[in-house]
Image (tube, rainbow over all chains, first blue to last red; front, side, top):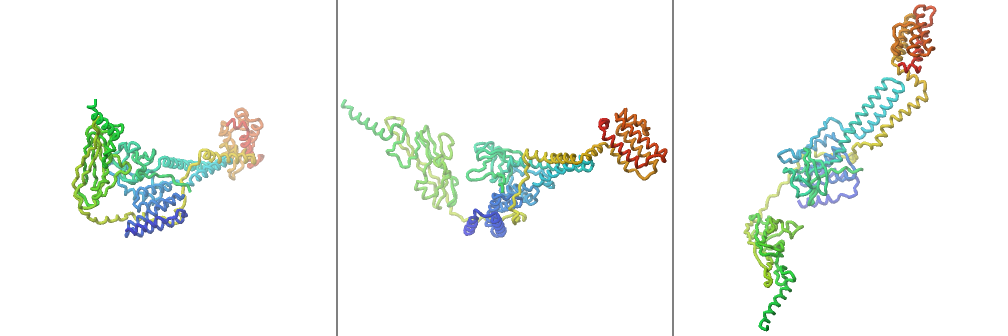
Length: 274
Length: 353
């Protein structure tokens, strides 16, 4: 056991600081694979491999990589390393980029099943996504498509002005209506994204966290029910080392972000630019 | 006078001794004769007690010892944390751990103004430990009398019997297996995980306004250029604005292969229908004179145009009723077309419509 720990320590310490993204990716994949190989025989060592894989994937993220596949890998590595809060955060970050990604949705559902919600009541229950799964999320190029349709509509209207043929008027109407619809949908989605950026996602990282009335331990608890690791919410306000959060049911309270070298709340920081 | 000299000397000596020992403050504990285990507490009287939990444990298991110091009456300096780690009886029997390292001297609790409680975590070193030893507590009791000095008082907290059992080696806790759906054990591989995918961002308001205005501006420019290149085309476009004219022109083009009189009748009918729809002329089959009068008086057309229209209808009548001496059917259709275009292009026509 001691030998294994030393070996894992050595493995963890050999990650080069200046490794290229591709090297990091290869190392992460190798660590994950090593973990999978040891799941049945040595779960403890397997978890250490998954921790290492998660760290490497996170390093890739901080270097500018950001896509649904990376976040899914990151979430899986954290999930298998028994780090439920980080796993949920990674899946949610991935879904922000690709809201219709089937794997991310499914794995997030698995992770949410592992969250221990203290009875009674519904405090801290996972938020319900009201967006129908069949409704596609508009891709990044949708804005250009809307502009192209708008331009085509203008050109068709111009042609109708020249020749007064009814078909050109129809074409102009159709193109402009399409552009309007697309732009409307884009504005709606961008409004949602703006809300997400304004009130970032938070995930409780420890069991038994009390929501208090103020930003200090001297304030009394707002709810007697404690929150466990994996509970999701939104960050409303930050004061010092305390954050005011809102849960899916609208419950608002203060929790410490970090205290006594312990992290109580994970906050979804915006992804770095490449 | 000499009878009192020894008494005076004695009083002076006592005063000098007190001055040396206490400085200026009579409540200050004197350094002379201060016990090594003096706690620092100054007050009338203190009581010390202890409690431990649990009192039955195995070797190496932790127990929490609480020393409770209670001041009876007034006190000047509160007690400091008793240094039990310096006591031989404790060092030999327990491993002593600090619970709160930051405020070590401070009490863990002060239930009231007269009481202080200090916590310690102890681990018995062997099963031969039978009790928590008694803890001495030394405080300074100032004197109420200015002549008699204060003194150091010593009190003891009673020991607590313990039952320490030999350590039983517990079986190692089995490592929890990793349980997860098969999908979680799969990851995406390859360079695709290095991509940077961003969320669609809305352009800024000025940029958005520019993108919105650019296509119409370009189109207007094209239209202006086109009108400059093809001025006649613009005129034709204006003609098309009249739905009645469009229908009439279309009908004239669609005339089938019929006899001359039939053709002349249809051409006249189309032209009369146009005048009815476009200018509101009454009558289904107007005479040339009625047409000329209507155009001149009701529609305000120039005399030349009104005369041209009357001439056209006269020619139609001639083709219908005297085909031999009349103009050709194709010529009639062309004349009707010209008449309609002339009516559409005239400025009065737009006012009339």
